Image (tube, rainbow, N blue to C red; front, top):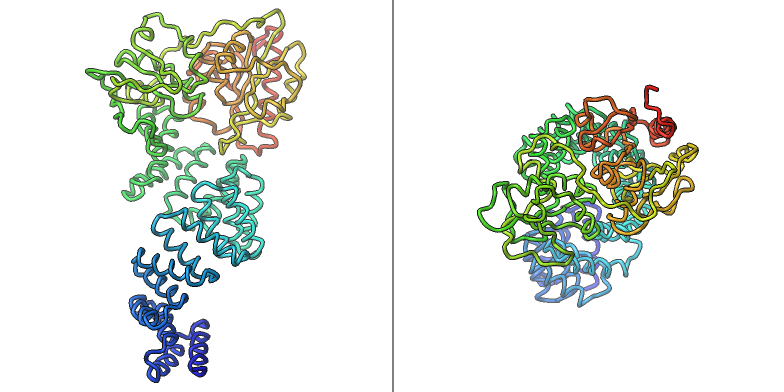
Length: 598
């Protein structure tokens, strides 16, 4: 018996070294002498699996189990069944293995793989945790659990596991690359940049690493360097639609919209890519490129691809609207993205009401503000009902439409004529003789590319040196606690309170946030500090023909809005200096009543 065990052990050692033929020769000779020895049968099953014959392995492992139902025999059987695509029998075999020998890491790990293939993610995660409890420093297990956690959005816990893998395998570029990717998902951009650059240094020319490196650099505002990384990624993986879309995005940011358009149309020309998530991204990004260029009819059409990227799941039983006046019933008109988008596209509400009676759904914080909309024709009073927070959609609603879809569905290629469409009363105590300027310097930090849109408070500090002006903070969120200089705090509350505060100001200076749209919709003077290659709605295609009073351009969206643009794709440390200096100079002239040419 001991001799047979030695023979099997020797054969398994050969197999581990890659000598399948040698292992098979030893085991066949042993099997001829002892045809019913379960360990020899199991060894032959292992050789069969290693040789790509999972079908033979299933039979051999089954014969071994019939003689001796050992846990490791069940593991081999389960793995072979998995390789053959027999998931439920594989799960059953591996479940038996973990019951028979709960201390065998291999059983838990193999069971996790099968459960994952079956779509039973929570159970797969539990099996991986059981395996890690037995072998906490196993890099493969740590990676497997991290990938599963990251896949369901638990990036914080995944980051810790990926960091442990990186520390266990400090010379493996893939370990650094995975850690960098999850740091990017957590918006920890500086850390992600250092880690991904380390990954690229260890193993250069890996397309996935370069793709993530490009995205991180773009988020940090390192636009030319982002373009270099994504160009390298595209050369390595020219058929990768995801990389093509990402490269098109950075090219559009750099002002190379023609090349960006060709890349995006190339993705859409591939029937496989066009029908998937990358096709939807390509179509949406093409829409923004066309809108930024001023090709609005085509731009609005492609812009509709956003509904494939973020499908509306709140009302699955209500059909999307096609733009045709419904013969009966009402239309559910709803917000879909940020507050700024809702404020901008409420401009189209009267035109929608000419075709359909509307139930208007908005975020709770906009509910009171929308009540200040002028209604000279009585359309809003007679044809629009605001859905109260938590209220049920009325039974006579027959279709639904997002606010951002109105230009496309109404066939309005150009922005409609402007008149202020949000008119709150002046807040108590506002106004007075002193010139008052509201300031907003940061957007939502959860937005992946907020670093490029928002201004570090210290960069805006020169504004506070302009004498004779009383500054009022309009900043919302965490950034409100870190003002660039001493200023008065505006009234807190919902967006109606913010609007009332703006009504009492002489001017608003802001970055690209909802504050810009609110002040613009009210017809209040607003100066927008805009990043290079910024959002499509502030592109030159939407500039007014007439010379602006103060900034680089005036907007067709809001005639009272002047733009102060970054001149080029500078590094973040200096990108805002030019626009901030221009605002300071303009503010001094504005305070004294002098126009730009005076």
